[in-house]
Length: 146
Image (cartoon, rainbow, N blue to C red; front, top):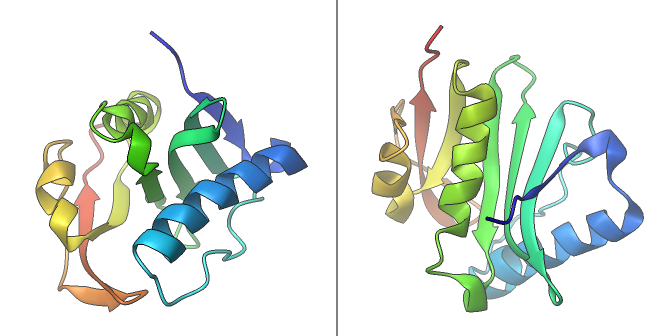
C-alpha cells in the first residue's frame, strides 16, 4: 500500500509548498469559498508536519499537523481533491497521525459536517460551535493516552 509523503515544514521544497497550496486553494478557496486567507505562518515551521498522497496531477489528499502556541498538537487543513474522494485517503492520513502522535492530546477545529468522521478517530466535542472562514466548525479534542 502506498505510503504518504511526510515532511516537516523546514524541509519542504518550493515545489512541495506550491503543490500543497494548490490543493488547499482548490478545495478551500474554490470549492468551499472560504473567506479567510489560508497562508497563516504555520506551514514552514519545523514543528509542522505535512502529510499527503499524490498522483501525476499533484496531491490527492493532504493533512497538516502542528504544535500550536499552547504546545498542543493540532490537526488542520485536511482536504482531498474531488476526483480522489471516496478512496479513504484522508482516513489513512489520520491513521498516520494517530500512529505517530496518538499518545498526545490532539485538538482540531472540525467543519461541522465532519463531526462524526472525526469522532470515529476518538475525537470529541471540546467547546461551543464557531464560525471560521465562513464555515461552521466544532472544536474537538482527542485526549492523551499516556
